[in-house]
Image 1 (tube, one colour):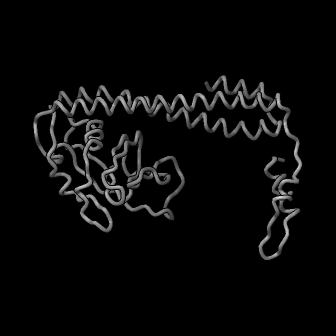
Image 2 (image 1 turned 90 degrees about the vertical axis):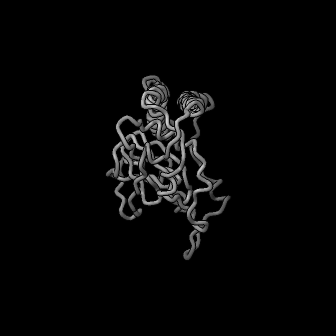
Image 3 (image 1 turned 30 degrees about the horizontal axis):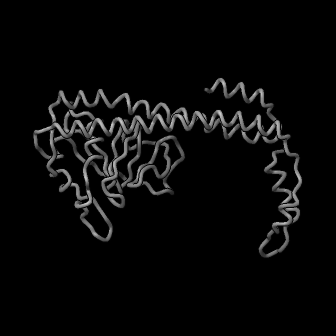
Length: 261
């Protein structure tokens, strides 16, 4: 039986009060359990610390990749001298309502104007995808590496032609200030027709293609380390209770960590 269940049974056995059951701090403090030796605790810490270090390193890699992409997009936009409208490059399509009660747990991220707000079993759009906040966090722009479900507080981006890379749309939209485009002062909202009429600089198709080829590997890096961190975090969560209970020997945990790293 796990330590959690044993502890829960202990709390049930010492709780008092029929209307509102409760336990005192003294009763909680009186719970007895077998603590690993200091040597064992340090060994467990070393094993889990290796996972923590790798997760932190991956986060740093993702951060640097994003900073490089943003810096490159800033430099690129600065040298574009052909003016046009945002609607010349892309359209903004409405997301679809998906109340929490209608969601079926799955692997598809559900995007609201504040980013991922849940998960569903079916996508509204295939990935990669660019989602833009329409209500709430106006103009906030998100990149989804895979299929996604943008809800009705968002737009999703569709390039106007095949020669417009989605990567360019993403970093272009992120570079724009939407604070003056709220159509409702009480509930901030991005007016689609006004947004698409916004004047922007438009590079040639060749320049956009070159830009996309430059930033695509950076986005791929972010995706790769994100997937790896999910796996490492799951491994850590699985190892911790088994190590603490003594059900798993440290040497076996070390082997599992070595294989993962």
